[in-house]
Amino acid sequence: MSDLPRRTLLCATLLSAASARAAGPTTAWSFALPSLDGGTLDFASFKGRVLLVVNTASFCGFAYQFEALEKLHRDLGPGGLTVLGVPSQDFDQESDSNAKVKQFCELTYGVEFPMTEIAHVRGQHPTPFYVWVRDTQGGWQPDWNFNKVLIGRDGLVKATYRAGVEPGAPALMRPLEQELRRPGA
Image (cartoon, rainbow, N blue to C red; front, side):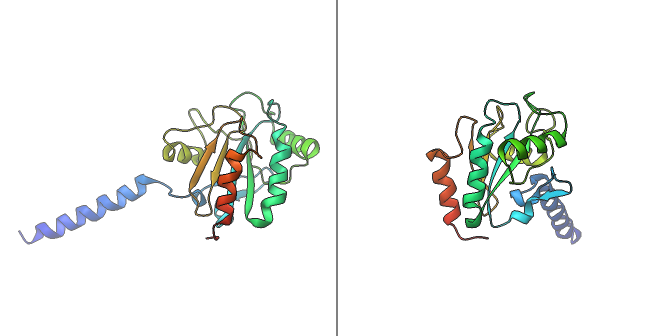
């Protein structure tokens, strides 16, 4: 009988560890994606900053938003904002190569904010970041290009936006500016 408390404690410890692993990442800082420039975009390197993660596509009717996104990145970057572009072919409106995406964004819109390689943002095999967003936001996932995910300085999702919410829209700017006013982590 004296072995029972020890076994109970062992089982509880193992179940607790398994549960923590099953829970998965708790903040955006747990993720990394291949960079359009080569190497890796480790989200942990943005810890303490505000991220606006946008799934993009070169041939989308919303591609004009690149210009406003770059302006946000440039103007609010010193205050703690990083815009992060995630090109995706999930809606059949992106180039077939990372080199073409890079060339288009730089030459057409002067994009200097960090961008990932072409990635899946929905469907059967979205990147782990978008799985995390979906799982923590009640099933939310991009329904088109230029959907936006606002990540606070604490690494948590603060808001999600559909493509029709422009980068300078009050619905996006109010929460974004509120996050920028928070102290960095």
